[in-house]
Amino acid sequence: MPRAIKRTTQEFNQPLVKISFSARLARPWLSGTGESMWVLKVAGSEMKGAGLLANQPFLLRYARLGDVVLYASGHRNQKPEALVVERPKFECDLAAMTAGEQPAWATAAERARTQCKQLFKRLPSGDFKTSLAKIDAHQQKILGCAICGLRDAWWMTTNDKWARVPKRYRNRVLCRNCFTKLTRIKP
Image (cartoon, rainbow, N blue to C red):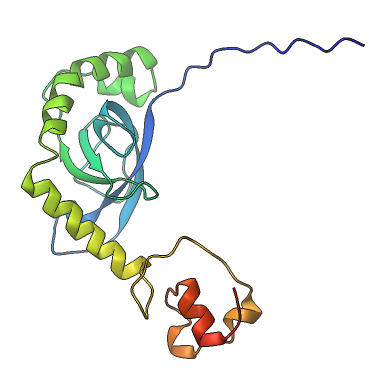
């Protein structure tokens, strides 16, 4: 029996990037609630770039659908974080964009290109490097090992093995080496 010829179709992949929004954008002295949002990438790459906010935030009142967002990540295995949110400096049909009409999004992306490129060119400046360093330090507190501070790749262990960890470290993050030292078993 002859093999069937597999037909491939070229799919349209929208350049959507999932990023983190935090309350630090609105009030830098807070580290409150945040949301994951989708951005239609206009300039840059998936880890550093600028684009249009593609969904309406629920908790964050300083951003809205169609806003221009500059995002970046210091590490390739982390979700990028929004650094700047600006109102668009161009005309766009928000009603059509809210309804999900692709021509409206294409027109808005075309009109946003110059503003996104200007914003993306500002990324290497000292202000944004400082912001990225602060975000990285904040994430280090959350994701770093409670003993040595190392950010180990994600790993898991069973509940029985985790029960052997001393109580003061059970609700914290541990790297594999410190887990092995504390419990004398391999994860």
